[in-house]
Length: 163
Image (cartoon, rainbow, N blue to C red; front, side):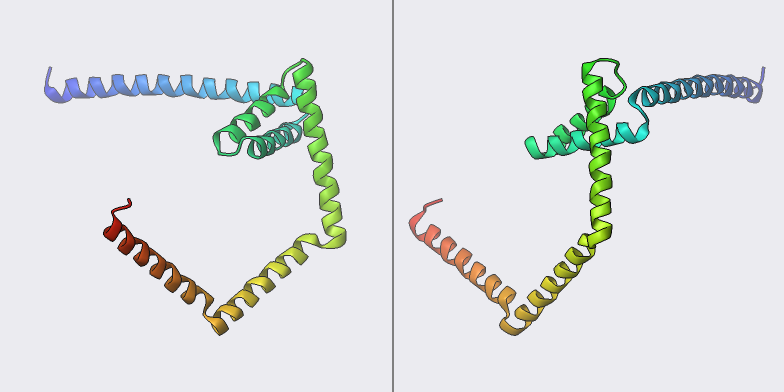
């Protein structure tokens, strides 16, 4: 057998294995999608699942801060909505409540244009801050004061060997 022939056999064998690996991966992906769809149905829909996750994430952010805790609580709440027990009932209720609160907040915002007013106020405050800085050079003076303070602290430290 020549080198080219043996190489062709190896390549074709590798291709069959790669093809088998792809088939297994596709079957696993389809199973995961089926599992997700079944869980979402038990949860009362993807919206309920997502709303419970959002509520869990907010609770995690407010109570524990950081990134890991909110993400973990969000994932746990979403997962809990798919369970047929009291925790699942609670998570689904939290999801439905979150959806209701979001709808009420959206209706209130549409009626009173809260986000537009906040946006205009923020832009106005920024523009006013720029005007004040242009007139009184607040940023430049603050930088100069900070530099002077750091220089004085370094000089004091060199003289007295504090730090």
